[in-house]
Image (cartoon, rainbow, N blue to C red; front, top):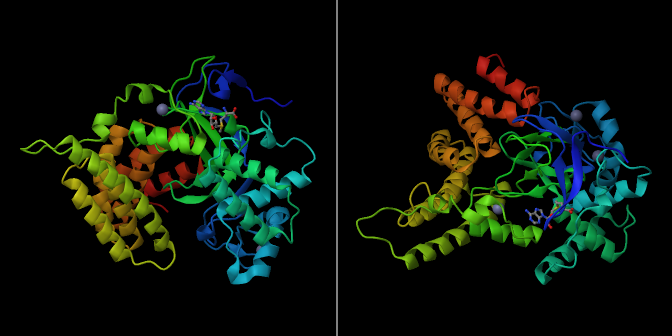
Length: 436
Ligand SMILES: C[S@@+](CC[C@H](N)C(=O)[O-])C[C@H]1O[C@@H](n2cnc3c(N)ncnc32)[C@H](O)[C@@H]1O
Ligand SMILES: [Zn+2]
Ligand SMILES: [Zn+2]
Ligand SMILES: [Zn+2]
C-alpha cells in the first residue's frame, strides 16, 4: 500500500476512521495533498475556467463538438477527453434539454472512472473511493427520495452512454458523494464545482479545525492552521463555522449523521456573541427572540431558493429589497453583529455585486468583515475572501491606498492557508504592486 509521509489512518474513538500525524506540524505547513479522483466544473463557470486544470483565465478555447467545454489549450483538452467525452456525447444528444444536477454529473464521471480503473489511484493512497463512508442505512425517506431523483437523472441523461451498477450500489455511491464530496471554491469563495478526494475524506470534522483544505487547480491541499503535535488527530470543518451551536449540530446531523463533541459544541462559548440581541430601553422578551430566530432561519432558507433565480432570469432589485426588508425586520430584535444579520448582509453584498452597485457592496461588506474577524478563527478562508473582495472593490472604485492595505491583509492569510507559492498569492502580489 502507498503511504503518506507523516500522516496515518487510525480508529478515532466515536468517529470511525480518522487521520493523525506522527510528527509535529506548524501553522501554514503542508501536511499532504490529493489529486481529485473525479471532479466537475459548474455550468455557470463554463467559459471562465478550464474544464481540465481549473485555471481561471481569459481566451479559453471551446470544444468543437459540444461548444460547451472550454480549455486553456489543446493539451488540456486532450487530457480531458477521456472524461469529457461522456458529457460531450450526452450534451450533443440532449441539446438545450441537457440539465443533470452537478452531483449527477460527478457521479457519472465516477462510474466511468471506476469502470476503467485498473490500479489504485494517486487519490487513494490511504482510502479507496469504494470504501468511503456511506451511511446508506441511516438515510431518511426525504433523502432516499432525493437520491432516487438523482438516480432518475442519471438514467435520463446517461443511460445510453454508460452502464450503471444496480440500484443499491447507486444509492451507496450517491450517499458516499453526499457524505464525502467537496465543493470547489475559488479565492473569493464562489462555488466553481464538485469533487471527491478519497484520502482527504478520512478527515473527521471539528468546529475548531486544526487544518484547512484549499485547492491548487484540481489538487486539494491540507495545511495546518494551528500547531499540531505528534499523535494528534487532524480535523477539517465540514460546515460554515459562523453559525451558533444548535444550527451547526443540526446541519452536521442532517448531512453527516453525527453529533459534534468539539470544544465549541460543548462550551458554546461563542453563541451569546453570535446571537447578540439589541440593547433597548425595554428588554426584549425570550419569546420575541425565539420567534425572530425562527423567522431568520426561514428567511435564510427562502432566500437561498430565491438566489437560484438570480442565476437564471433574475430580478435583482427585488432581491435586494427583500434582503433589506429582512434585515430591517430582524434589526428590531438582533444587534448588527448577530450572525443572522451578517448572513443577510452577506447576501445583500452578493446582490449588489451582481448589479454592479459597488458602493452598496462595500457598505455591506465592511459591516460583515468587522464581525467575521471576531467570529472566525484567524486563518479563515471566509475572512481572507472578504478582505480580497473588499480590497479589489476599493481599487476598482479608485480608493487605492485602502484597497492595497486591505489586499495585504488577505495576502497574510492566504500565504498561510494556500501556501506562499500558490497562484492566488502570486496574482494578489501583482495586484498589490499595481502591475497587472
Ligand atoms: C468524510 S467521513 C470522515 C471519515 C470517517 N470517520 C470514515 O471512517 O470514513 C465523514 C463521517 O465521519 C464521521 N465523523 C466525522 N467527524 C466526526 C465527529 N467529529 N464526530 C463523530 N463522527 C464524525 C461521520 O460518520 C461522518 O459522516
Ligand atoms: Zn487548462
Ligand atoms: Zn465537448
Ligand atoms: Zn463542533
